[in-house]
Amino acid sequence: MSAEPGPCGTILENHQALSRRRERSQRELDRARTEFAACQYLQDLPLSVFCAGSLARAEIGEKSDLDIFVIADSSDRLQSRLCEYTLFAHLIRINNDVLGFPPFSNDGEYLKINFIEDLKARTGSRRDDIENLFTARMLLMLESKPLIHSELYNKHLRAILEHYYRDQKGKVSFKPLFLLNDILRYWRTLCLNYEERRHEPDRPWRKKNVSLKFSRMLTVFSTVLPLIAKPLDTLSDLEVLCQKTPLERLSFGLDILSDRDLTNRWTALLDIYEAFLGWKDDDNVEKYLEGGEQKATVRRYAGELSTFLFNALTHDRIPFEFRRYLIL
Image (tube, rainbow, N blue to C red; front, side, top):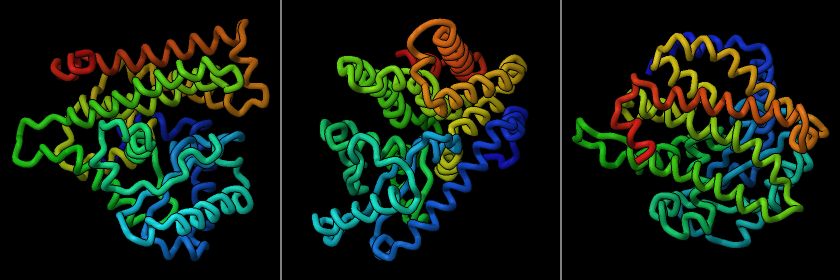
């Protein structure tokens, strides 16, 4: 996989507003890593902690929080409930008192130790969803950055990717259908989860709808596009792809297609995405969602983004079998 950005990658690098967000995100990521490394209790545990969300996507804003996940190899020490509670206490302290981020979302729903063997073995099972293993596995691949023990993080990421690519060995005609299936399942799950939220009036379902149409959609399909536009020859190439942010993956996929029309529209799409990130920063974000001209703008921008992604995913330079696979 080439390290040099193509035209779309260069346009992304030079986008001023998004560049400022990347710079701020890197500063906050470095600060978080420093504080996590300063915690001796975390240093002594054989586990990796990664962040997801806007910080991992390098698009942090004024209202961003810290979404963290813990992954580990099985060990007797980590099976202890007391160890788990002490770990969570340290994570909460660092998040709230040291870094000053808002409290963990959904009352700490994702605060648990995810064991790597469970993440692999329970793929597609009922427990995959019930125990939030599915979410942890998807976010590890789609939007994650290590906060502590990066060597373990890399080991865990590779273990998951090897699980999805286990049928590649010795097959020239290998296609990453297992991986694509799970990524597309994640997208459908996000859509269904949004519908479930609409029945709970006290929960911010309108904001979730906007995130679904922008950041969630982009995160999922920015990964699908490179996977179907050009086969990744090695597992290392897949690792490099996962280490890119969603916008970087999308620009990489667009540069594979090398379509002048899509490239010419790319700057406008980045402007639209930056507008979405600006809405999220607004103290009165609901004003964009309740009606009138501003809601119409949100809807129009969402339509332009989804149309752009559709045009890329169904491009005639993508093998027909993959275009068909996305539907059938």
